Image (cartoon, rainbow, N blue to C red; front, side, top):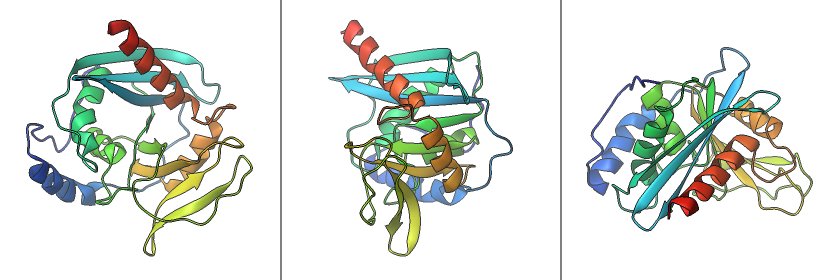
Length: 225
């Protein structure tokens, strides 16, 4: 599937240039309602082993969450590990994996931050702005922000704040597991992102799209090594 990139930019940049790009692109993020309920959801995750990065994309039907298609891209790491700049390390590999798909998913769920980022521009935002498509982030750990104590039962949620700004939501998808951090990437509202995340949680901590993408990336990476 050929990708039409909006606001394309060079990837061979310094960390300082990457920060400047984030600040330039962050105002382009739009929080707006989905046009329609998605029929397909792509889960995006990646793994890094030594100097190799591998991106995995899994497309599932919605709401039944049946596998439709999957794709992997593996290649060299092209950007150093810098907290807050992971999208420059990950996005090029994800885009190459997305290019291999025959099905164009309605929405994308990434194992990453969206607006819950110091510059409001995590990987979910970066992909969303470049692709101009609905994307949201479901991260396994907090990068920034504060929140109230989260209820222990599955289905619990509390807002994630930076000062007075609501930048995401903290969710409990399974009892006795760590929470998930959901935030808007582009062209979706936070309530929609939260509702879809819960709808894709089928007894595991991670929602099915990113859970399956995570398993695929780790399994293939181990086989490749």
